[in-house]
Amino acid sequence: MASCILLLGTLLLLLPPPTPAPCHTAVRSECQKYRHHYVPGVQLAGEGIDITTLKHSNHFPVDKQQVQRPDGTCTLCHSPKKPEELWILPLAFTDWRTLGTNCHSKVSKSNAISTEAVVREVTKSITNDWKVGLDVSAPMDSKVQVTMAGSHSSAANFAGEKMHQDKYSFSRDLVECRFYSPRDPCQCMCHDSQVTNQECCPRQRGLAQLVVTIMQAWGLWGDIFTATDAYVKVFFGAQEQRTHTVWNNNNPTWMAQMDFGDVSLNTGTRLRVQVWDADIIKHDDLLGTCDRAPYSGTHDVMCHLSHGQLKFKYHVKCLPHLTGNSCLEYAPKGRLGEPPGNRSGAVW
Image (cartoon, rainbow, N blue to C red; front, top):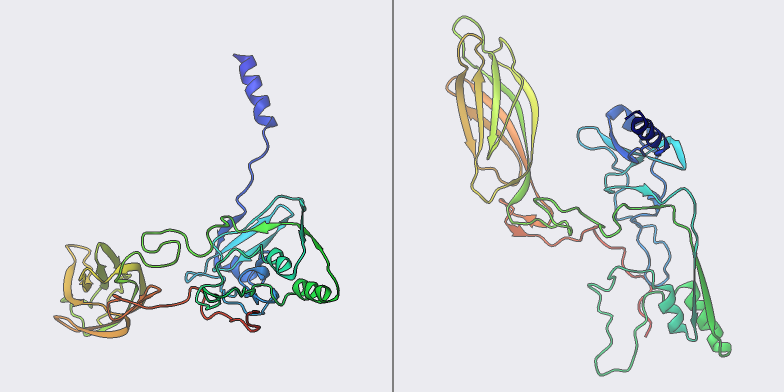
């Protein structure tokens, strides 16, 4: 028995120490400290590329400036290359990781005997369907070929110049050294959720984000001998949220914001707001109820109670690709906003 325990202890000592998670959620103070210390490689993500020259366009459809969530938290990451440092991850990126501690270079060779073949080689790294929405197809009865991607790149220009002088063959060597990458290279936009799919499209109509702000009340009357001890309950569907209690005040102010997240407006569910008087000795007393059918936009509401009034507001924002009062209509929208466009044109 003693030998078994000794062997187990030896095995545990030989095991490598657990590797900490590369990224974690940080509090507001940490986020402010590293606010402009972005993770390595973030400057390479999301920049538009001129499809004809294959050069950087200096157009960034992806917002890399937003780093903190509404509650002030953010995501901080570290790297085995510099374990003592922390970097902040912009909200537009779902995750980040390193690809080992060493650079493993990869050399690939290719040969070409025409300008078109050179262009095909230099554009092999383009994996997205950049032709969507562009009318670049040659007529069916035409023998003309369309070369657009990479047609004005430095490699294509070099090959074209040489082909006008004599018959050449071209060799291309590519050396890659990868240090960082997204955790899931196939997950370019959104992760699956109950409300959106991988294309960031809502799974059904009528989906929206709902935020309610309870502001203040006047002229409440809940107790005979003392002022009102008021709090507010807000209901939507199966969700219930409430404010803190303002003690001994007939004109309380809360300014409490309640985020209900993604909700469905397609079910006819009404937003219910109730004002209550807290009672330590017996049950609490309901002072009044307001029901509203929420619709898109920001709306101020004055609720008339049995004694007094309550002011609150709510904000409804349709999920992407939805519009209308109840978010039931389809709204076409590019996933990354307006594209930079092609400036050089196709070569026929």
